Length: 48
Image 1: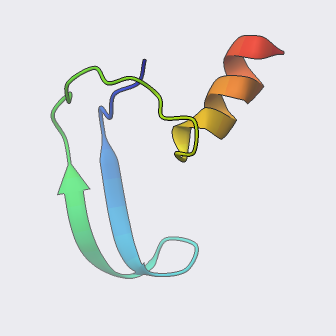
Image 2: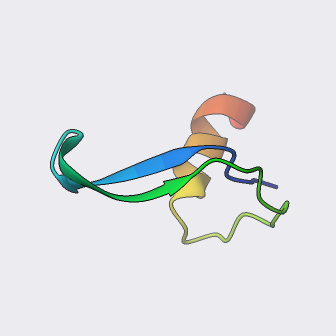
C-alpha cells in the first residue's frame, strides 16, 4: 500500500522552474499497481 503525504511538482528538471502543483495533506491508502512508479520504491525499501 502507498499514499502521498507531501509533494511539490516543478516545471523544470531537478526542482527548477515554476511550482506546478503542491500536495500537503495525507492522501488515501492505495494498492501499489505492478506497473506504477511506486513499485520501484517498494522493491528497494520493503523487499531487500
